[in-house]
Image 1 (tube, rainbow, N blue to C red):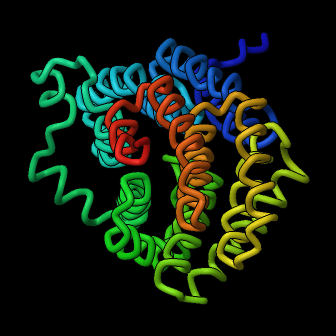
Image 2 (image 1 turned 180 degrees about the horizontal axis):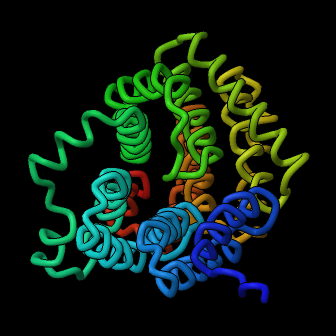
Length: 313
């Protein structure tokens, strides 16, 4: 008599399949399959894959533009589960993302005791993380992302340089999708290149632009078109082709809106604001900063939105 198929690996299959699908199908709906993977893994007792699915769902939700406060609350619950099952590896991966999300949101409504219980690192966890080949890559990515978002140039440069040096050494990727790392590394590279007049950084930005252009063409217009447009806009800004840059910023904004990336619609408006401010068109920049403020607020990134107030007068 033939045995019934085992469901022990259902969670793993769903997890791996979803990792592929997010490249070609709308990411906002595709990541919901991680929750199905979590349920399947829990039913079969595969707690490692259950917590992995929950973690990647939470982190992907942030990059997909889901409400920041809701993402923070979900991360707290996931970190409690990760700690319960004593999975130090996953805790070291999700913690930098959680810290960035909390800083973006400002007031999350999460009880302080829950924050401490979920995310408080022990010396055991810190020592464990220090030995992981992917830890520096993960923390430096979130470091330069946060510095880029909050316009801290020197910190962004330091963390982006560390990220660039480490990325070829690490083969482990269970956190942020690699295309998000490529996208934000390209944006921060163009920013550093312009501010520091450093061709090396501009070339790194161009390399990231080519990577996202390729994904927009061959994988998914929905997921990558707006990102490719924004990198192209930053490139043209860096090359002082201001007419082309203006057209591309607008294309990035419209594509983000059309494809429901609220977070990237906010970002594209913000970067357009800096572009017009730096090129002497202050009144025009106020329109884009105002739109960015509105979209960041709608996303739930209230602390980030507040940093734009100084550009609205």
